[in-house]
Every structure is written in C-alpha cells, then in structure tokens.
Image (cartoon, rainbow, N blue to C red):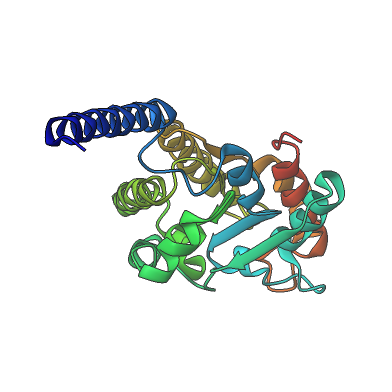
Amino acid sequence: MNKNVIRSVTMVSVFFCLLWLVGLGWAVAEYYAGKPDNIPETTNLEKKVEKKDGLHIVAIGDSLTRGTGDETGKGYVGVLIDEIKEKSKQDVRLTNLGVSGQRSDQLKEQIQQTEVKRQLQSADMILVTMGGNDLFRGGQGLLEFETAKIADIEKKFLENMNFIFQQIRASNNEANVFFIGLYNPFIELEQGKEMSAVVRHWNYQSAELSAAFPKIVFVPTFDLFELKVNDYLYTDKFHPNTKGYRLIAERVASLLTW
C-alpha cells in the first residue's frame, strides 16, 4: 500500500479519535453542570426528625425551688411539671439546680459554672426563685425594715439579678424564663404591714428588671398569701406548705401558652 495512503488513513483516524474525545468531554461537562460541589449530609426534613423530643425544664434558685416545706416533696416545680405533662402530652425532663438557703450573690457564682451553662443552653423553660434569703435573712429583715440597710440590700440584689439574667440570656436566648416574686410570711406579725410595704417595693423593682429582658416574666405571689398566709405556710412559718406551693404552681401555669 502506498505510504501516502497509509499516512492519510492514519491522519483521518486520529482526527476522528480527537473529535470523539472532545464530544465525550462536552457531554460529561453538561451532565455535571449546575450540581453542587458538596452534597449536604442531611436535608431539612431530616433535620426536623433529629430535633429532640419533649421539653427540658431547668429550675434554679433557693429552697422554694427545692420544695422545702412540701410534705409531698414536689414543691411548686413538681406540681408545675405534672401540669405541663398533662396539658402538653409531652415528655418533660427536669434539671433542678436549686440550693436551700441560697442568696443572689451565690446564684451569681453558680450561674457561671460550666455544667450549669450547659443545662441552661438546652432548656426550653427556666424557673427562678430568688430573693427571700437576701431580704429576710432568717427574720433579720424584720428588725431593719426602716433602715437604709434594706435599700442597700435591695440595690445589691438587683445588681446580682441583672448579671444573672444577662448570663441566662447569653446561654439561651429562646427559653421562656419565669422569675417567681416574693410573698410576706410575716404579714400577721406586729411589724408585718411595714414589712409588706418593703416586699411590695422589692417585687416592683424585680418586675421592672425582668421587663428589661426578652422573654423573662415576673410571676407575682404576694397576693396569693396576703389574706390567709398561715393557711399556706409550713410549720416553720416561712416556707410554703403543700397548698402554698400549689398556689404558686397554678400562678405560673396560668402564664403558659399551650
């Protein structure tokens, strides 16, 4: 066969081979055009499935959070949990971090602990009782209600609570926070009416502070105990009894949306 013919056939073959490769490359490019570089690991639907079930409620504060004085051992927190379970038909997990005798300066320290922050981050609802030990101090407040010392104590308390609320919101900006106000357990004593004026002012300032933060609700309790305080107090005449705690739980429950 003539060498020129062989050369011509070879060149034609190479041309068609190159043409085929170009066509293959174009087809592959068209197939992958517009596709994402990285395929998401989960879709939006799958993310919804991964969302935790039930509610996580965190309670912080003093002996009222612990339920001291309630013969059933539930306290207002336990009664409220039962109410939420019944009406929401959801599982509820409670983390109770209350410390009997705790003051606001001690809660200020507790709220900065790593594990406490972790619990607050995962909470759907946060319950707070605080102030009784700051103000009453085992009855010492009754002796000082007319002095400037009460004003100083109230000011320091509000400063501590402002810091505590800031820390709560830094850990969790979504959970509803319910801050339980004070009642006056000494209302029927000789200086009870004067102490009531102090408690009402204390509660007013606490409510104003709560209103400065999103989703922090002040829960008044003063009126619940005002007319029949001894009917709702434990034998120590300071902590609520079972009926008293139920009143507080019902007041908080009335503020919830189902």
